[in-house]
Length: 193
Ligand code: AR6
Image 1 (spheres, rainbow, N blue to C red):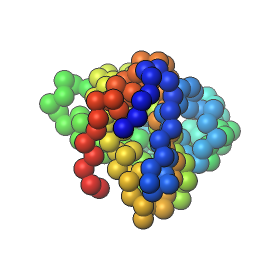
Image 2: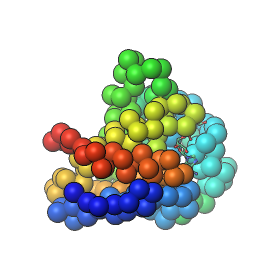
Image 3: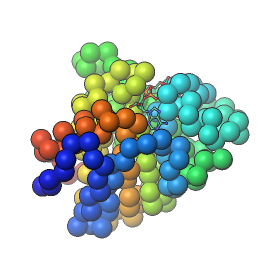
Image 4: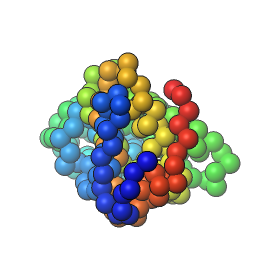
């Protein structure tokens, strides 16, 4: 499908004109329509990417989050981006890894699907995801990357779906980028949406 060297960011353009980007960096710096936050059920902030997003957006983000009444694992709720370059933050709650027999994969898949639904509702052309659940929540990186890529490919294959048109999978370090590239090299089975 492609000859990409390990550790190198990339861009894939689909026949639908949709684009998938693998990028390395800090999601808070991206000027996209929506960035996704890997939050917890309170939606009141935390460490990791959640902390970085709240710091960069400023205190108004927390004020709006307080009005949301939390969020169930696998679901998503959105706020404005405030001081972020992104217009919106879509907050989702990934599963805590408990060994893999507790529906973690279904719930992680549901995070991506819920975020895409929210991006469609908000008419976002572009959306950027961190590798949800792969930090504090302990989800094995490669398995999580496979779920993220499968969900992204499903969207990119749908010509009639108006939003989003560009998906960014953001890697905070080279391990995440390597994991995404390994999954792509091994090939993906993408079920029809
Ligand atoms: N930009 C992009 N990716 C990042 C950034 C960043 N600025 N910072 C971290 N990552 P985590 P989780 C990557 O722990 O596992 C919070 O306290 C990081 O390398 O942020 O879903 C919440 O409040 C990793 O690959 O989220 C919850 O309590 C990925 O983002 C809990 O952590 C996710 O790591 C959620 O845990």
